[in-house]
Image (cartoon, rainbow, N blue to C red; front, side):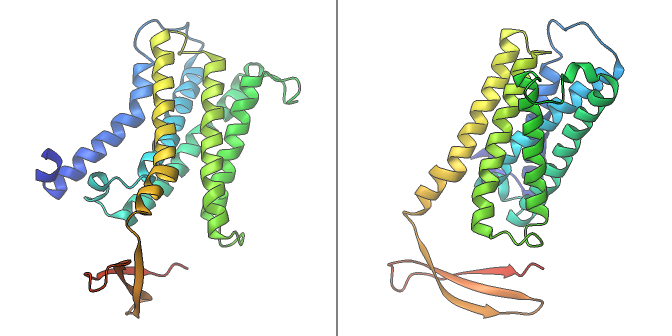
Length: 249
């Protein structure tokens, strides 16, 4: 009720604050309580970039869930544009995290040979590769001639596998997460991500099957735009809902 009573501007500010809180909470909460001995500025910066980058990648699932109250102040198009921008920022932070360690503290990463490197380190590397593939195939899907349906399935699988491996990496390293409550924090975040994955890919599609719609008209408009008229399937004489869609290059 409170969210419905908000003006669009207030609601937008509220959801922006929620997003920033979700992204920054793991980073700041890990700084509370007993701290491991400091190694140096670049080390601490690398750790901060890693936690922040992973938090951004995890909250991506919330952006694609299309929760009605959260999406309403912005619109679906803006949400998806921000989803793409946030993914680029997230992978950028993770790449800087790895680059700083590789250049400044190479011994901590273990051997490059996957057969000799610690498993949790390999989990982090594979997660980074999967996130990279995720970004490349999303930004240049048409150029790579990847079918949308195949890309959609692969997108979900790559994102899920990448997050799981990243959490395995964090758990294996144990730096900043040795305290039980800090470990519980990341377990809680992981469970939320798993719920969002299940909601977006399983629960929501199953619920939508109960209220199918059919396309009753496709009408061309100006500026490479079409109007799609939808009506509830199986209900003759039901109201028609026009939706306007713009073609992509």
